[in-house]
Length: 305
Image (spheres, rainbow, N blue to C red):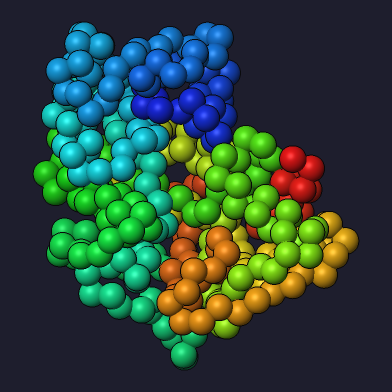
């Protein structure tokens, strides 16, 4: 039995992660601001992770085999965690995002790599955080991507514990539990005959099932590798293909409306390439599923909400 602290973990795939670790017999503690009660068999600590003194006080003398950080969004939060958990944990797993690769938010504003004129899925070493430099931009997408990149950099620059960043693809499935509403956006609009806004030549992107990412985070907590690892089911998909699959489920042809350059489109429509390669995690022993196998059921869940 291991001692596992989950920071956040009170909604969506975080809840599945907590339940999986508990059911496997581990001693699981949830740390949050007290917004929701923990599930049966799980301890809870209440603190604001941004308040270093309050966090230290809540932890007391506790130590953990693994900390899984579900809600680290900024370098400031990473710096607090780095100081507080130094000497308290044998392993630190941060839930990061594929958005760290987004060319639109990178300092160089560079397109994804190509081979023979086509986009190549990005590997973990496609991004050197320690040499990336400062990005400049504005808006929620930029702030989210840059915050995650810089948070990862804090942990990587001068490691004080074994550290893993799980760069998560777009998470789908779970019906009403999916608080983002992104898949429901397609089910609702296509069923109602409302146009779905897409780029003229959208690029494929990466996805992962909500239970699969919970499994991967739990798996990563028990391994010995360090550094970034991409988390994506096999099989990238673009917005047109996604819309066709949704249409099959709701029984109505999709109405796709092309937006101009720089205009906002529907979720998962991208005018740039940054789908991920999952070979590192696969080579380390994680068995990924295929998007084609689980997506129809996820669409059905979204359509029934």
